[in-house]
Image (cartoon, rainbow, N blue to C red; front, side, top):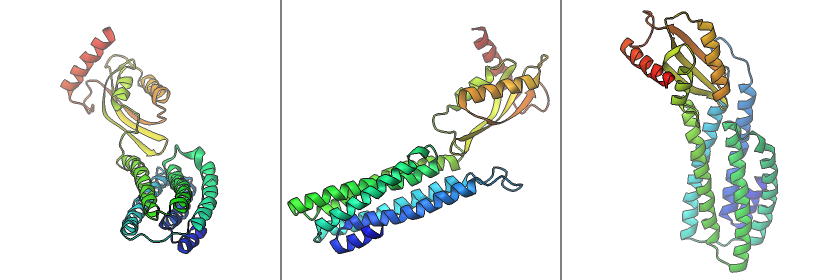
Length: 285
């Protein structure tokens, strides 16, 4: 970062300065990500019964917002440079970009194994954006030295900013889904409902909720209505939990077993009869 900052000031390259600014956010992003991982490993307590695992999601949110803000500032400065081109020392620009490329490739190798985690993915995207920037700056330096076209520097800066914005919005979309407790991506709640309803003894499922506590930790809660005939509720509970683990990798499930026709059943009785008939028809088929 320091090398790119100094190199950008000496060479007059906005692309180098943009990359240095991006690397500054990387330093902060990696510090936030690391802190979130360390704090997220702390055990749960009486107040925070889920522990501190969602700190990783908050860190990913912070990183995504920082990337968007940085990209906006780069676009603004690039537009100004496009209108008023400034001379660029292509040799200094290329040499510093080569150093930055090596450092970023090392960073990508260190982070590539943890991309399933949104927090680590946020840090990975920071470094990936820097790597693309370094490659682009290196190519731009060669092109400027060859053609003398100074506007290539702000043009490259705009492209770098757009790439960062696209990746940032993809990250933020997933983070917001987690914070809104939306169903995890790739998990069909209707299929979950049908899987539970297909267990022997189950006639209906209601108040079904599926969400993510943090990346890779889905959770579920539901009321499961069983037949009024002699049924072992504990056996039904075990069967449902087994299907959830086997089919959806949901190990954190809170299930309330209710007997059909009892006064404490939380469903509308008419709706239950309708679902029971549908379940019976499907089972007969």
